[in-house]
Length: 238
Image (cartoon, rainbow, N blue to C red; front, side, top):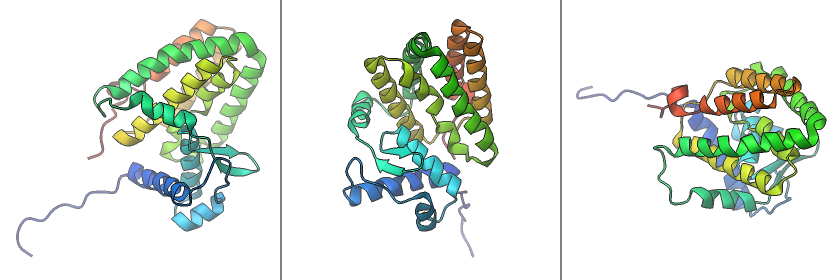
């Protein structure tokens, strides 16, 4: 063999994960599934896509965060109404991909989610704390078995929107979550450490349990700041 030989590049894990997302979305589109239609179960997806069950489960969670599906425990996964997803796409349409777009989205999230947290805590403190605790207990038991992409799970944050009793704030939160998740996937950034994020969520809940609302809001702002590329060392895969 003569001449220059190109080195083989490793397959990035996020590329495999995006492929799983793309295959499920393509299944929805190509079969013209409508909101409320049921998707194949986890076992069928694992067998068809030939990936692990944790990857499929996390892909469905991310697709739920992106507004494509709705996961109902014990019933299955269903196509979601995509109204808010379309609105989220419009929110960032025309903005230059990359650059400071992720940081700008996080800035918007810091401002909005502070209000969502305060509203949820003021209106439904006990129910909010109970559900946040349940969410974190579930995550704690799964951390070691989860895939890296579990750091894209926004269930903890979305719980505040569920209890804020303000449909405008809740919808704006969902739109920002959709836009931020899509940006993370499009930019192929290095994912945040799921263990660190879980510890930050637990610290936020501890503040709320101790009736330290201001402390919880401050910790949440710091939590979001840790997701910025400069803070987390995120970069494009080589």
